[in-house]
Length: 207
Image (cartoon, rainbow, N blue to C red; front, side):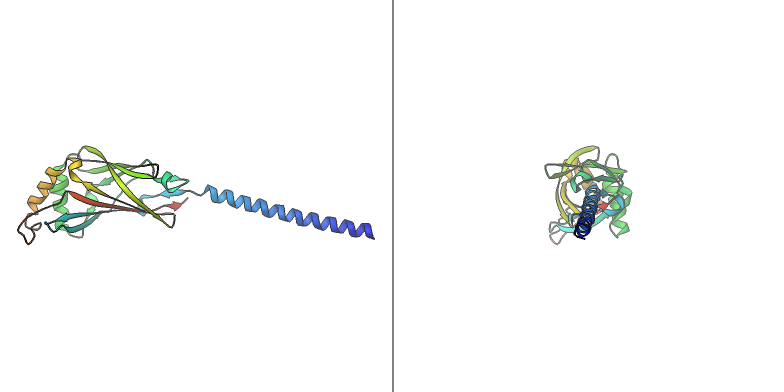
């Protein structure tokens, strides 16, 4: 009887040990699944907004580009998913909720530039620093970006363009001529500012 009892105890311990091993394997399997999850940047989850300024009081005028084109890109981290992401923005997608303003911007501002159809660019990340290399008016320049990542997957990138860097002061003057009265403040001075604030927001989905 003692031998039988001993065998039963050994068998029970063996079963428990097997169950524990299975749990460990399952846990390891879940870790592998979690490790394989990637951050995916998609154009439909991305928005591009801008703020320009008028009058000497520097009153803001906001707008956006409703279309941003790029191929889906993934990575093990947010930085990896965004690094070397090539994109293009059709100027025709400019939208300010004011059809008259939209037409003036497209015709008198972008229309006064070279290569008026698209703004092209690449996001580059190095040592935690983000830059958008933008090509506009036939000029390619880097736009430094400040980046905020919340909830691990929500990304906001902001920067300020100086239009002089893209040789766009002639286009700015063209715009100011057609908007002369609208850009005139209480001091009687008509002014359209050279700096434009840019905000890009995206949500990096799981693949």
